[in-house]
Image 1 (tube, rainbow, N blue to C red):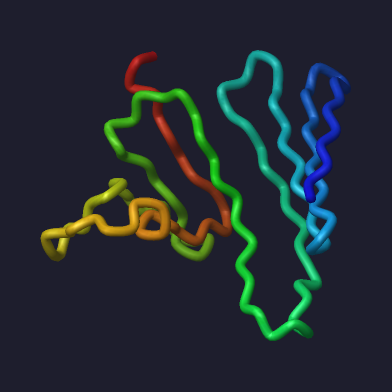
Image 2: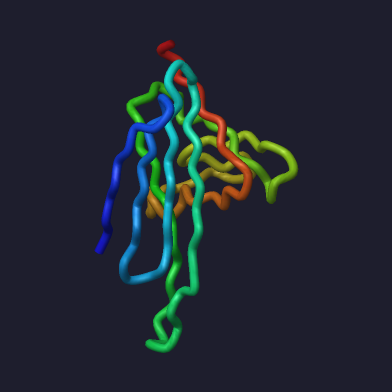
Length: 116
């Protein structure tokens, strides 16, 4: 179950999502006159007493023209070029389009709207 609260404070839209099954909070901030958003997460503990493995993810969907290109950090060090549904080292046959495009992001992700 998910709860959502939305607040406008100091020209910043705050979106707070609370998961009720696993203890997690996600805050999304949209700043007026800025071209970026901030996401802040706090997750845990994740219950393990049922013997079922779990992953907590955030899936971000946007109406942007990206040519499948974006940059994601590599453990907070460098930003690496990523192309959705593509692997440079081998011809990729996409059989799991969602799971095959998961990338760990610890610091950030850069996306450019080619239409702007």
